Structure formats: C-alpha cells, structure tokens
Image (cartoon, rainbow, N blue to C red; front, side, top):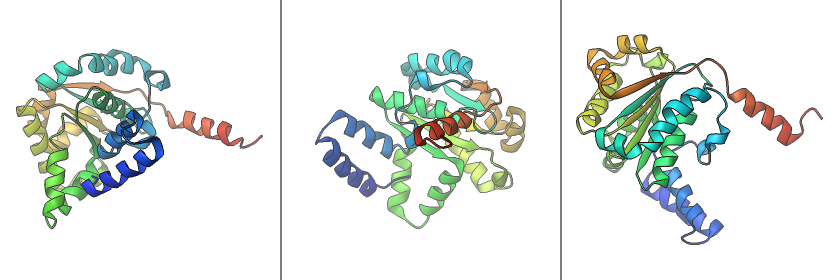
Length: 225
C-alpha cells in the first residue's frame, strides 16, 4: 500500500516527465496508487500466450461485462502453479478498470498482512488501507501461501474482507497457488459458500510464462550472441 505522500511525489515526477495533465502521466499515477505490478501496466491481450483459452473465455468476457460484475459483485478466483498467468490476468483486469474510470487496488496476502498490522500503530495507514480496500475492484494475490496456513488472524481478516465485499456486492479478483479443494480446507465453509455463490473459479494449465520473458531478456540484451 502506498501513502498519499508517495502518490503525490510520483505524480510530480510523472508530470515532469510527460507534462502536467498528460493522459499517460495520469494513467501511470493511477496504476502506481493501485499498486499494480509495473510489469503489467501496459499489458495487452496480444501479450498473452499461456492459458490463452482461459484468457479469451473468462478474462475478456469479464472485461466486456465489467459494469455488470461491479453492480452484482461477481468475482474471479484464478488457481494454478507459479508462472501460469494469475498475476498477469488480475493486473490486466485492474488496468482495464482504471481505463474505464473505476477505482482499483492490488495486494498480495502477505502485503495485506503487513498493512493491516501497520494500521494497529498508525491511524493514517489504517485509514489509507480502508480507502484502498473500498476500491471498485480489488485483487488479492498469492492466497493460500504455505506460511499462512496456521495464521488464524490473517485467515479471519481475509474471510471478513471477502464477506464484507460479498455482502456489499463488490468484486474481488483472487489468485492462488493452492488447489480449489485445498483452499476450502484452509479457509473453511464460509469462504467456500462465498466462492460457490459469486466466484468463477478458473484452473490454469501448468506452464511458465516467465520463460518467455527470459528469452525476451536475452534477445533484448544480446546475451549469448
């Protein structure tokens, strides 16, 4: 989570780089504030190669019906191994939301834990986190990491956040390395009920899109030539 001061400083830097009020500067500031990973600020449909079928059938359809998803609180849960595109897909949808004038916020489960606990001693940080978690679309990535299996506090906070947004008909985009059934065992029947109600679960096929990034790096840097 970034503070208002962080965002304002970044805004000044972008205005100096692109010119005051330039659309690109405004978009970059919005992505920065939303904490979307920078690698995916400019991701386009043409950039997707792994799990293309899931992208076309679910991600693109969700993008087309984004207003309906927002109005009804329809959510997505991407499940799969490292490098299959979970973060790319949720980031793509968040950037599409920003381009449509909606608000968005990206976090990982571990970062959420850090930000919640920071709020215990910092009222300003607590207020800031609450504002960000009230965004039209939020993404919670890396749900179900091994280190959090025994963390009852974090599990209860995740359940509370999901329940609040579920009841308020506000979407959540989630990514997890844990299989759907194992995720339910970890977080219990309440989370299972919410997922059964308003979440489309997308199992992504194994693969590693980061290998393509490695090839691009070698090509761009002329390594091995």
